[in-house]
Length: 89
Image (cartoon, rainbow, N blue to C red):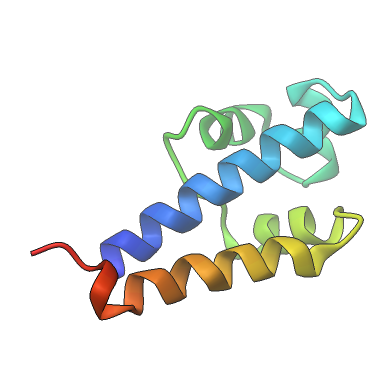
């Protein structure tokens, strides 16, 4: 289950990074600067190669108009994983 949680986090933060960057009209370089990281590291997040670290995750969440909307989505995803009727096998 831990691996599923990691995949969910990686996917959701990748999507959050992409939508936030597009919404703000930034290049990858500009977004990376806002997140205090290298352009390569940011590109790896958007490309799905790596997940966000703690600081990057917090910075992305605080950039949202309604941070609780994103956190609620994560909570729902985790709860679905924990629901026995949604488990496979």
